[in-house]
Length: 145
Length: 145
DNA sequence: ATTCAGTTGAAAATGATTGTCAAATACCCC
DNA sequence: GGGGTATTTGACAATCATTTTCAACTGAAT
Image (cartoon, rainbow over all chains, first blue to last red; front, side):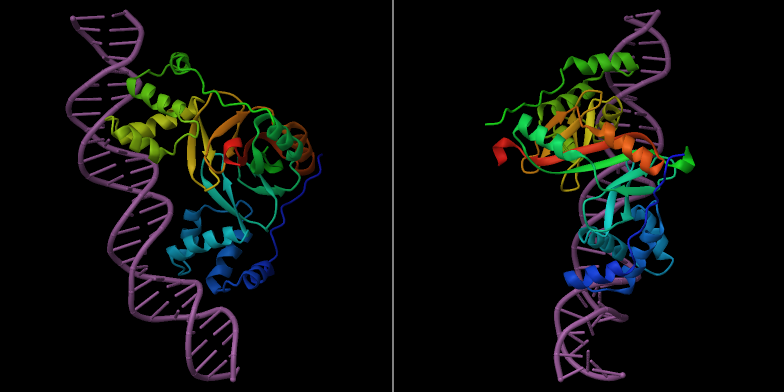
């Protein structure tokens, strides 16, 4: 049996701290919206988030604006789902990559991607100055196999 | 001076062959559309492709349908541009990854991404059965530095 | 040349995203 | 703790992107 590591959502207070630091206001709506992403290990598409919040009286444009803001702040990470759909998961600022289950959509983040040597080789072969990369790994989580 | 490798678009006849093989018809519109992608080393967004073709009398829905078809056939590859825009480049079926210039958008494809060991480690750590990955590298091409 | 399933283009229908503005509210200052 | 102000919000409209529909057309097999 392989060892499994579960995805820990970032702590609740992080929103408060990041808002302070970057001078944006901490509103009720922003807390609710980030919370709902934190609670879903598979994240949500914007459309799902809009649906989930209009019940609670949070307007559609607020959801759009908030998702964009949280992404800029590094608190949401965008995932290009296997089906081509865009989803967002609660995350923390920094260099992480998503490992996504193709069946249930659950996401585990990982940090070390081993791209250093590959990037050096690419730089040498193509003359590009490498500035970064996007990486996403897909598979089946233990439950879905 | 580092060695540079330029991106060679796939050969024109490839569309013909792939269509034969997969039993879809080779139409004038499909040839024109794929050709226009082949000619642009930075690829095009769907919107750009629609614009480029309505001049020539190719309908908007045909462009949408054709891009989707060519992507399925492996003749177009979708790129998630640094700005979040979706672009498509002419490609050939198989395991390739794009190296994209953040300034001019030119794309070079590469094959060996060194993900094997990383995927094995992830499988061991998380219990996922790994099925694939999406990788995209960003930087500045020699001309844009 | 004939045939016919697959493909196309125009237009409408749908769906997603962005803009506008008056009302509401977080948070700084006292 | 309350008041003032710049930010944020929600309703609605406007815009933009994508999909559907269907009659006419066309590639390619015979």
